[in-house]
Length: 428
Ligand code: UD1
Image 1: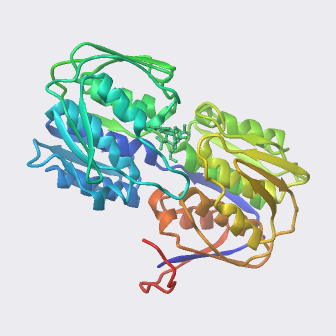
Image 2: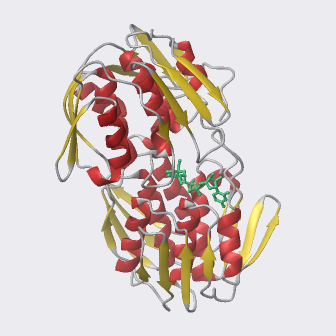
Image 3: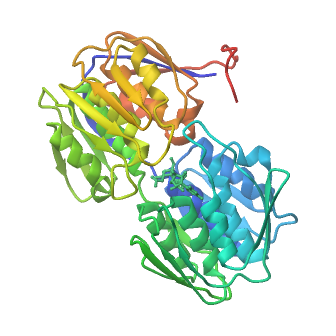
């Protein structure tokens, strides 16, 4: 299992490019199931989760070819409509093939994803929405068995603005009979990106990016070509890296409007932030302060940047209260940050961080999930001496070449490649 060695204390300087959005690319790949033929996607990041999606599409009869950052998916009617447990448990986003399969073929058997490190992550809202559209849903043998002659448009009010639920229902509704209205829809930029692709395929969708999305079902969709939007979470992570290590970093090829909640907090903490149409520059002017943060659905502060921001608060002046409202168990990074000398008290969904500027010291730590891994790497940039982060396969799920990107800015970071499972307690 590879590890990441970080030597802290070096200021970062320079310019770094954002890759395509993981959370958009995965959903776009699954949308290809809605129309037979050749779909072309550009700016697709090279990530393990994208490979997992390609494997799932191939198990459903598609041919997937990657050429650099362009991926073509050639879809045709599959022999079976099953998303197997072995594929789904590796990547929860696999549940997003349910809507397209059900809408196009009237049936799907998709493994239930199960729990994960950051919370129970149910899919009841996805299933309730599909039931409202006339689908028969049964849970048997760990699988969702879904069937419908043709889905029917429905009014669906989500109790929580679920990102995956909004995407699954939006895709299902494109081929349903009649009009579907999603209320309290999630407003994440990735939803807008997915809607834009579906519209290119011939879908009739209005309101994506607002809390009410209206989809008028059509008989048939056609394949199309699309460029994935920039990854706002990767961009945010690189911006926080620039902040935590001090110095002057410009993150390009991103969309600053997608990062407003983070930029607001960084300004409040005392960082110099400049934006252009597609870049963000962060400068450390010294003496950054702790600020409070509460995660919320977009346009609120993203839960996917909470762990990285906490690392920054650990080395800032004062006290910060961090509240996680999206997931119930998303403070797994805290115990590892404590190993680096941080002062954090978590209680339920609230963590109190007492900042210790210059107070972290390198240590071996273990990544527990994707964004927690990023937070430990960032904390390592600010710690004295050497931090070794193990289990970085989590990091490889969602960050393309993070170590190259950070070292190009002057960070002391290096991957320790190992093909042995040197950690007996390692779980898959
Ligand atoms: C979530 C994040 C998304 C992030 C992704 C990966 C939010 C709102 N969503 O999307 O930004 O990129 O994780 O980390 O920030 N829920 C239910 N029933 C359901 C579906 C969801 O109760 O059927 C609850 C979840 O338990 C959670 C909340 O709704 O508390 C948000 O979940 P959802 O947005 O669906 O999660 P993801 O789509 O995984």
